[in-house]
Length: 228
Image 1: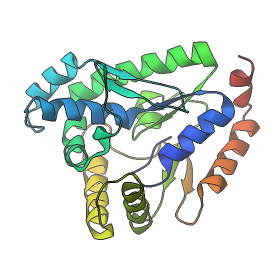
Image 2: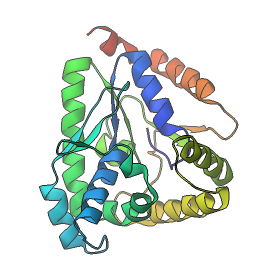
Image 3: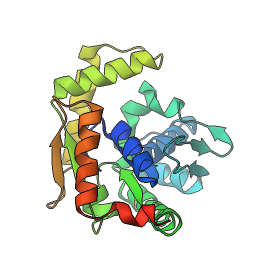
C-alpha cells in the first residue's frame, strides 16, 4: 500500500491486516527511526556517507503486530518520537540516500518473507512498496487524497496526540514532502502500473477498508492468512 502522507494509509493498512489476521509493516517508520538516529548522532541529513554509517550501525527493531506497531532503537521505544516535527523535516533527505534505501529494502523483504511463512501474509505500507519492495505482490494499492484534506487530517492527528501544528503549516509540509518524494532520483513516489488507486478525499476509513476487503476476497488473497 503506497501513497503520500495523510491519505489514511497507516490506519487502513493496520485495520486491513487485523481483519485478515496478517502481519503489518510500516516502512515509513523504519526511515523515521533511522532519521532519529541520524539526528541524535549530530549528523547532517544531507551528508550521505555519514547518514549511511549511522544507518548501518543502528539497532532498529520494528514489530509486525497490527495491534501494536512497535518501533525501537536498541531497547528504547521511539514510536512517538519519530512522529515529531524534527524527524518529519529531515526524513525525506535521509530516505533519499540510495544505499540507505538498499539497506532498508533488504530488511523489509526479509520481514515480508518471514511474515508470509509465519502468518500467511502481510500488509506493507510506504511509498515504494508496489514499485520496488514487493513488485510481485498479489494486491498493490495506491491511496491518494487532495493536499487540503491530507493537511486537515494530519493536523487533527497531531492535535489528538499532543503535537502542536496548524493547518497552514501542515499543508506547506505536505506539499514539500510530496515534491521531494515524487522527484527524488531513487524510488520516487508513484503508483505501480497495476496498482488499484483509491481517492480517499471523500471517503472515511470504513469505506476504504470495505472496498479493499472486497478486492482481497475477490482475488482469493484472504485464504492464505485464514489457513494459518
